Image 1: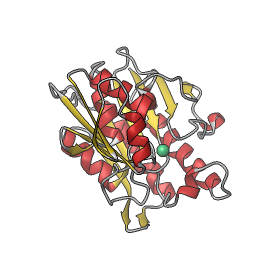
Image 2: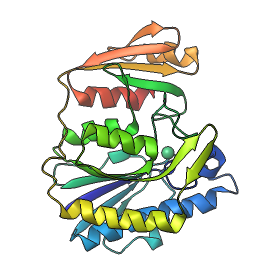
Image 3: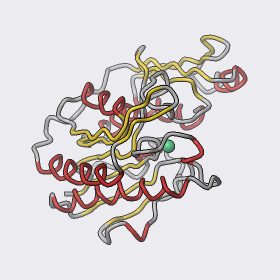
Length: 265
Ligand SMILES: [Zn+2]
């Protein structure tokens, strides 16, 4: 069994403020360690379930956060951004049996995490077919083009709710929820235990029903904080200004959508 783990930091237990997610701040270290611990737990759960090959992608900001020496020896570790449109799952291909998302967070347009956003903080929100889209949804659709199912998600309560709404067979571990600019979190050690156990359970069960049906058509709306960013993005082939701060784009091929995000997000 070959599995792929994509990891972010805004959805790990405790993380509440942007300073805690950025290397240059003194309070980053604690959350770098917690992100690492939650990923290690997911790897251990996967090994307990019989995974023979585990790829871990560091998928936050610089993509150079996870402390490599703490990962199990079996792991292949993806650091930095290749420039592939699948971004947070850039090295995924159809040889993988399952995709697991750790430390994921609610999308722009939701209030379940003070750090809620989609792709970059330049964007207010992304909508797909009229619905606010999370990074989880983008990765689940992208993985679906390769026939790889998402089987596990950990992060804030909002993203876990989204995962369950997308497919009720996906197992989730909610480590926190946000209230205004605050978060209410479970203990860091408990988060690690729950992730280890839940990943093991997720990979031991029959995941044939975790596949996600891709919509036949994708209508995309991207709203920016700055109208100047929308103006520039509106020149991407196929994109158009919908409002001074918003562009629209449409395709039947999800790869086109991911390529759009690579260049305009
Ligand atoms: Zn992030």
